[in-house]
Image 1 (cartoon, rainbow, N blue to C red):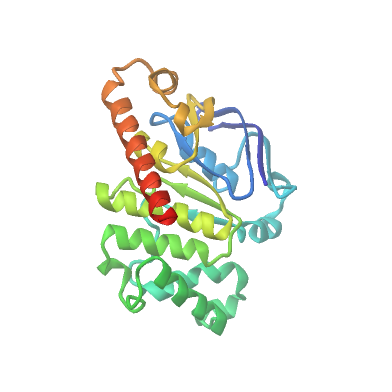
Image 2: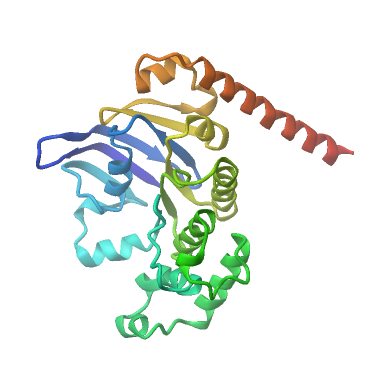
Length: 274
């Protein structure tokens, strides 16, 4: 579905942000992107939708090389790539509904979007998404009146208004408390499963990443140093990604979280069998 082949990004300063990155993401697959600050995580996901122009390599989405597209072709391709931002990227003075409908701008003509004339089916879809993300009844609230968790839910719903095939998620929990962070991660995973979406989630919280994201890709100095199941992330892998450190507390939390998740799954199976 998505193939990154020998992707490089060198900035005008000479800094090499990405170095020969090759990844395949299957349809419906969700992966977590972890690594230290400056490892190239945000640059990678911004290269995928060409908010950042890669220096070399290929980005192929459903057989289409995004690097070869002109402005019109890229605009068409971006319809299928939903972006969820760390700082939400909402228009503060607009209502929740208006922010959601902005997700349809790639499908709407200039004058229709200028006068905010959207199809009835788009409005119906927006109401359905608001209900799904837990914001039913909040369509007329201004974005600047929402909490951080509510803003992120609006951002998620807006990305889904594009009817994407791929979600790029940049630090979705960085500004949220632990409970809200778990709720947002759970919501993203559920929506990807329900809609068969592929997703790349850039996330700093290793424990949260290994709990919710089945595949983990670790970046260091712009290169991939680990790519495998979350269950394989241990102290050796963390050292490979982040460098030498006492990872005991982190790995214990990861093991406890994994055990708790397994217990919940076992209890669910027992209740179902009964």
